[in-house]
Image (cartoon, rainbow, N blue to C red; front, side):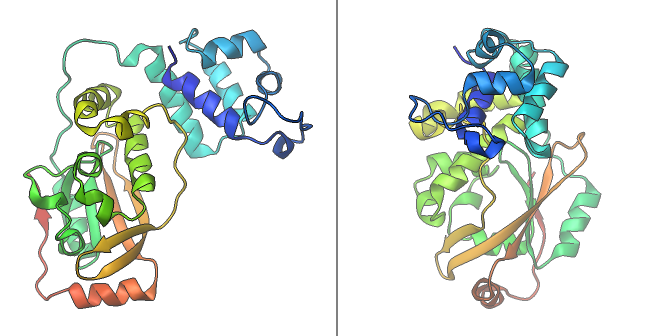
Amino acid sequence: MGTPLGDFVRAKRDSIQPESFGLPDHGRRRSPGLRRSDLATRAGISVEYLTRIEQGRDRNPSPAVVSALADALSLDAAERDHLRYLAKITGGACAGHQRPAPPSRHVRSTVLATLQLLEPAVAFVTNRLGDVLAHTSGFELVMRGSGLLETREPNLTRYVFTDPRARTFFPDWDQVADEQAFDLWLGPSAESSEWFKAELAPLAGQEFTRRLNRHLPPPQVPLRLDHPTAHELRWQRERLELPRTDAQELVVLLPADETTAQAMERLRRPGGTLRAIG
């Protein structure tokens, strides 16, 4: 049985074309991407050791080996952080049988004040499980009619995978689903993510579970929404990490084109208010 770390290393290796590293193309192979022997050489480890890591038979590589693999795979800063996180949870940080306390839904007053300053922009506070913890009136305008905010404690991940309306609201549903599944690897904690995934899997089905072994960050692309009255809206997203103790982030949606900006002007009404979700 594989591990998050092994799955990531193997998936990343398969995504790399040998010629991008100045290596010869060995012709048609059963598996795409970089050969295991080439990666092992670049990392300074044996092919046997790399095989054990990828197959989940070695769950505790040293920090030096993890760094060597990051160098060998030419990972960027975000991917390096993700690799270290996967090494941590693969080494047993998720062990335990008691359900952890759910992440706090409390949003600090200064964060709420920041949201208020962003009005009437489209912004919300969330965590890596997808909980929508607070939002601007602009966000409510954009999400109106989608079904996301109809529950007492809205959760974007649960909405994407269990509400049929999400497939219409998000024209690029596969991209959004990949993003939400990937975020579960990043927190708020390994324990809470594992419990959330275990609870969601029976409801969400194969579209969710088959994404749980994909550990490559999805590409960063504009977010498209099929709004019930404003039609297609396109957004650029800025995600601002809050302090680790919050385990939350502030997400701001910025119009990606003039058509979206004009559509939002038509949707807005005076007197927008901030809403925090308790």
